[in-house]
Image 1 (tube, helix red, strand yellow):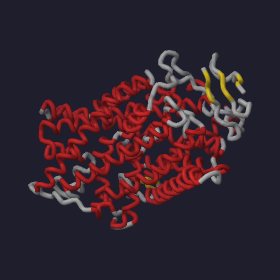
Image 2: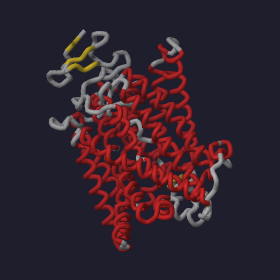
Image 3: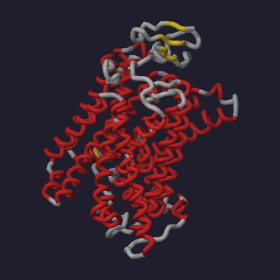
Image 4: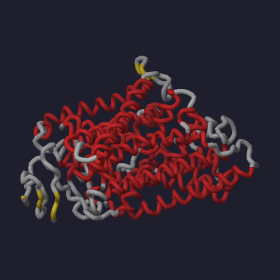
Length: 522
């Protein structure tokens, strides 16, 4: 039965499976059929920013688990893969750009769904601010390398210059995202292609040079590096696992553009799986190559050297690739951070769009740009929030900014785990239909949610300690704990305010579990 829903833009109709349009998903006015399988996968890889993640995470991970870094990367991949199955199955049933928010509302109700959406939004704002900062740092580092001027490279340490440049990067990324997913896709093909090409060259040259035996610290590959049970302690393993999980964050952007993707029910899920395979391939080969070339020592080029752990590629670029090709690695890191900065606007803008469309946030955020068919108001709001957050935190306290980044894993595990459990609960009546339904709709998502819940709880316990992060505290409680829990509590406060402004949504009258997804027909 075809019905006209008065909440939809003029000219749109919806097909309701049960003839009842109330409580179903709504058209957002986004540009449909703008992205294919490859484009969606590229956007997912770009959001993760593999080169950026590697240069900032290789060192800290080695510091926690030593030679078992590849094993920990595999361990972090497992819960992400299990959760990816949950996203795939939920997207088939409800292809909505609100993803975690929409699905969790349908599974667990408006309040749990609202908090899940908040977890995604606040995690993305934190990531955006960090990406802008990294892009700024590498911008001046690259300029210093190209000009041979230490004074230009030192501009990154000038706080006003750094912040102004960072705001400029945020503004540019916001403007590109504002123009819609088609503009985003075209730019990302070039930036992701550059990243992957440079990584291939780095891995090949690192392995070849390591095998010559001419470099101090170089070691032979051993299969034991893939054994997570050889990590020295459970605490070290969980710390490394938390870093590994962060390295995969962002693949779900493939699903966030589902309403703009050709074959919205199946293509986004396939793209997410493809992105995950590309990412784990990049991480494993780079980890193995870097360990073979540098070893895990704490001096010189060793990956465990605390002086270079926050930017491993800056230390290895010259020794591995030479002075000429080494510049390409700096370019790749800058491209990775800039590309990720730009595509990371996609999930936050579309989640805010969906929450506004379903009356969980003010209606103004549901406005779609008539020409670009993008969530313009939500994108600009995300850009302003990112710039303001980074500027205030930088001038207020750099320790607070760093601790906020440490708290990021808490938010990531929070909304991924809820989404995974939502899948198992949403499809609970179908789990006995077939072995496939039992595994992919029930067992895998539940296990993924369980693993991430374990990391969430362990992280909560660890960050209570003031020694975690920068070592600062509030009334004897670790500042990372205060920031992480405080940001989630802030979401609860905003939710209570919205509950008074939008009672219909919180009474379950707008988006319900009982009504299937509505198929939009232009």
